[in-house]
Image 1 (cartoon, rainbow, N blue to C red):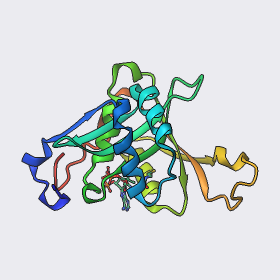
Image 2 (tube, rainbow, N blue to C red; image 1 turned 180 degrees about the vertical axis):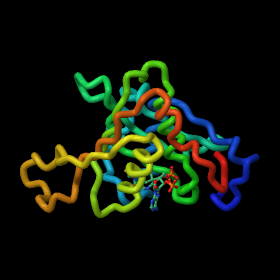
Image 3 (spheres, rainbow, N blue to C red; image 1 turned 90 degrees about the vertical axis):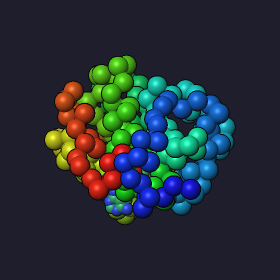
Image 4 (cartoon, rainbow, N blue to C red; image 1 turned 120 degrees about the horizontal axis):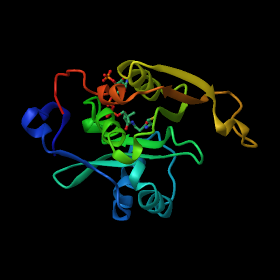
Amino acid sequence: MLTGNDLGTKEAGRFSFREPVASDAPSVLTLVKRSNSLALNSGQCYLMLCEHFASTSVVAETDGELIGFIIAYIPPGRRDTLYIWQIAVASHLRRLGLTKKMLRHILARHNLKSIRYIEASVNRSHDPSFRLFQTLAKEGHCKMDQLPALSATLEGSDSSGEEQLIRVGPLDPVSKTLIGRRKRAYAI
Ligand SMILES: CC(C)(COP(=O)(O)OP(=O)(O)OC[C@H]1O[C@@H](n2cnc3c(N)ncnc32)[C@H](O)[C@@H]1OP(=O)(O)O)[C@@H](O)C(=O)NCCC(=O)NCCS
C-alpha cells in the first residue's frame, strides 16, 4: 500500500479524480467508518448520494483503490453555493493536499462556474475541519464566516453551539484555481 512517506512525484501522478458512481458507495461507506469522526449513514444513503450528487461530488483513486471523497450538493435555489456534506481521505494519505485537490477538481467543472461560496457544517472542537476551511479561505483570498448551523434548529439537538455553519467566499474564477496550488514537500 502506498503511504504518505512514499509519495514522491512519480507516485503522485497515480492519483486520479472523477465523479462518483453508485458502485462507489461501499468504498465511500468504508472510508466513513474508518474516519472515526464522520456520522455514519446507511449504505443506501451513500448509494443515493453518489448517484444523485455525482455532478457536485468527487472521488479520488490510486491503483484502483478509492482513497478519498467529497460529497457535496447545491442547496435548492442557491446556485452560487457548494454545500459540502461529508469529506474523508484515507488516514495514510492525509496532509498531502488531497482534499484541496479534490475540491479544485469540483470547482473546475464547467457546470459549476456559478459557485462562489463553499459551505459546511463543522464541529468547532474538530481542529482539522476548522483549519481546512481556514486554509481554503486563505488560499482562495476570501473570508471565512461562522454562522449558526442548521442543526441548531433540530429539536433535541446539542445546544452547546459546537456545530457551526462555515461559509468560505466569495471565490472568483481565479481564486478557485489557487486552492491547493501552494508548493508542498510532496506535489500531488
Ligand atoms: C479533514 C480531512 C478530510 C482533511 O483531508 P486532507 O486530504 O488531509 O487535507 P489536505 O491535505 O488537503 O489539507 C487541507 C488543509 O486542512 C487542514 N488540515 C488537514 N488536516 C489537518 C490536521 N490533522 N490538523 C490541522 N490541520 C489540518 C490544513 O489547514 C491543511 O492545509 P495545509 O496542509 O496547507 O496546512 C481528513 O483529515 C479526514 O479525512 N479526516 C476524517 C474525516 C473528517 O473529519 N471529515 C470532516 C472534514 S470537514
